[in-house]
Length: 346
Image (cartoon, rainbow, N blue to C red; front, side, top):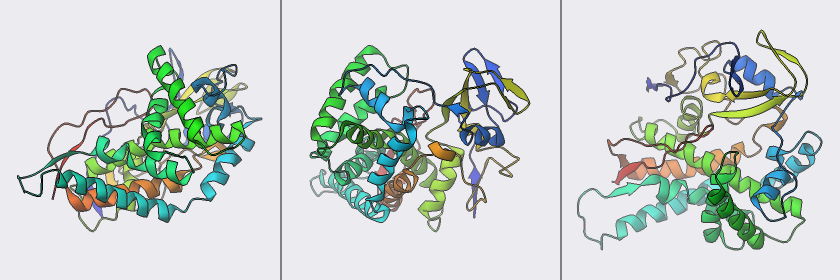
């Protein structure tokens, strides 16, 4: 089944050899991105390890996402063990039920009287709320409802470049999340919170992209197939960063030790050497998108994120119609997350 062409988002570079800019190297070809992700000689940028416990800096220094090679395997194992206790089918069913309840509440607030098409804003109503609530509940946080805004505040400052106001807000949110987490060693608590933060923006962005591109799709297109191509054509995580630990040849270029790289998933996912007719929405492509990463640092929660997104999007596709309004996106160097998507309830 083919669907219309989906053009690349603004700012997506073309595929080609690594290119050097003012901030380091930009890597766009599928083979080069995979080579970096699967080679231990490339590592993640370092973070400050001197922050007080229970702050954003402490969280960043404790989670597997930003860990140096020596600490990464053990910390990743903490997250994997927590996720292994969760059933993706349960996550999907619960996300679907809650999405149905939210949309029913929106309809109910008309007082039971039909007043024509009812506008609903998908990102705020469900995409940013439901997945985090479900995951927080299943991870044992005492107050999943309070966890949602706290996780959102942490996610807003999680990556480098956040301003002091956002960081201060995130510090308070991390402290709140620690307080509502089950008793555990600090490193376990941090990596449990890290799972929530990693899921927040990325899962919301995936849901937003699937709603934007999927409400006009044929009804017989399965949501799983829709999500797979949205991950490739409009990825919620557009890029990730790595640093060379030694001088390495990559794609015909010599990268010196300590030079940073920006790996562009959005470009590599459209590499014609891997995906024929790369701009076409084609269900069932032989190669998966790189959006969840690869190698030892690939996202451990891929199945869980897809399950949560599928539960939400299934219900939105069944109960909503799209509205022909512009879809704005939050400014971010590596993420692509809609800020508003308006739909009408059926």
